[in-house]
Image 1 (cartoon, one colour):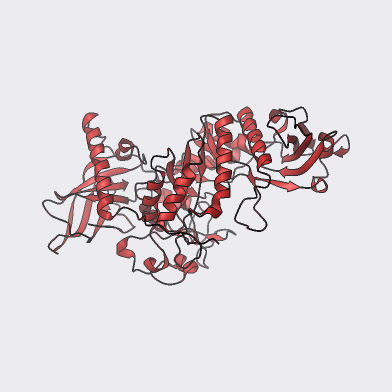
Image 2 (cartoon, rainbow, N blue to C red):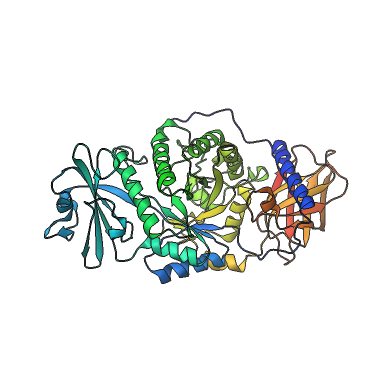
Length: 548
């Protein structure tokens, strides 16, 4: 791995962060005053993950069932992975792909010079609706539909000035996965992001994309987008997902991934104007890992990724790292506490503060700074699994089941910075049965549990609490004042605002309530703790603390 350069940036201090949050909260109060009092009725409980990565199907019934289950727990968005455009040879073209008894790639390219051959399979039947050029062909062999494209090595149309071409053989069934998922999303009022074509990875550096055929991939991406426009131009198709991942690192070694994003975003802007794109880089904050990334580097990486948009509305859905053990969700008051058993299976026994450079919360504050002013939107990709141990199997996956309390903690640690929370991934981690019932069922059973995402301790003794499922009930605050006196007070929650997030233009699912403690102060640098019992009589199960 490359040696990464640390910079002097650090997330806003607790006091500075509270100042920013207080300014935003004041805006919300002003909006409420100008447009009438905020709604007081509690919103119908749904889990605050609103999107999921899925494995799509070519079956309409299977997609409707899956998306209906996702919608039942509050999901409104699904994302499928892309497929790879793979270099091939004439001898590796499927033997049943023939035109008049001749190898289909040879027949389609008859009379022209072929530089390279490629294969592609994305579970979709492209066929005649993808045709643009005279050399485009389609062949049906049993239940398989092959589509053959002859792409010019030079130029961008159908003809190569040098007479040299690349041939792509697309392998698909008689149905189309992307069309079926798009239809299901449209019927259910949901949004779908289809995976883009991706290159294979390099053989010398396995974590980087092979851009040796970048021009061909660019032309093929254009053909993919044109095909989607012809067969899948439905309201449910919101945009496209960049399949190739990278860490949130600003090292130059990752420039090839940025080049790929930039190229494909330009193609989206050209052939699918109005549709957006999602990319999902990952946090790796393990202290003992050579590829670890500081908050400053993550901030810079987010800025670099945002600048690949090329006119496309881009969402950067950062993976939080908790499902793979690469990231840590903890508050300053927990930094000396031992990591849980799942994280320990990756980083070993020790404290959160010693095993990770910074918390998820710090990284997302840094990422929000990185995207500021770029036009890109920060999302969070909550890893909906846990590192696998003997105690939490999930089908045959390399990762295991997680607990709902752990997921609640992950949502909490994201704070109020991401505009949307999605999760990797629905199947199998939200559907498998292992030590516990499927997470789908556990989300439904615990959909009223309060989750506290942030707070502001005002100088007049009011404490604004933000999060989910906060309406009614009581708020307990434990704090130390400026004289060192320790207090523990429980008050009735007031000023419930179901529209807090909407009014600020942040995550629209965020709510707020206020604890009125009376005249008091908060000691600088002192931890304070908050618990909420909502109108359903349910208490938060994830510890929340902050510092004065």
